[in-house]
Image (cartoon, rainbow, N blue to C red):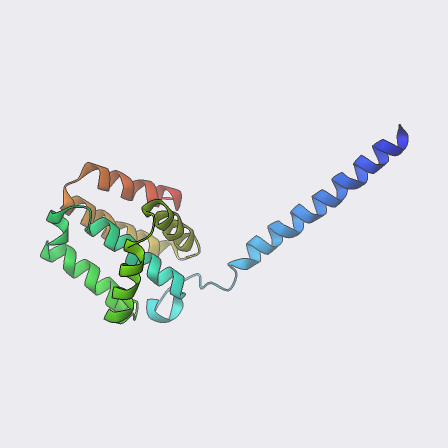
Length: 154
């Protein structure tokens, strides 16, 4: 009986050590990310840039009202331009995204946006996204936008 308890205690200790190491890895995984983004074309990783493109395209394309709105187009284009992505790169990403499951894309977008440590940058992105969602006039789009950023801590 005592041997069984000792074995269980040793297994619990090993499990504790492994969980602690994994937590340290998760924390250090994002340590190379800048805490302040001054130039999004340099400071963001490729997956983060495409997550922003995907988010804005998803919100803008939610209704024809926002898809063809000049103000929404200007917001999206200026944001994409600031990311340093070329038009062919963006088009290729959007074409590939159109053939994928929307739920998977949203999860991937949220995961990539979670890597961004600059809260001010994310707040600015939230305001742009919400502005486009409000242009759409679609309550589901507005709620989805709020939910995405709620997951990011806003």
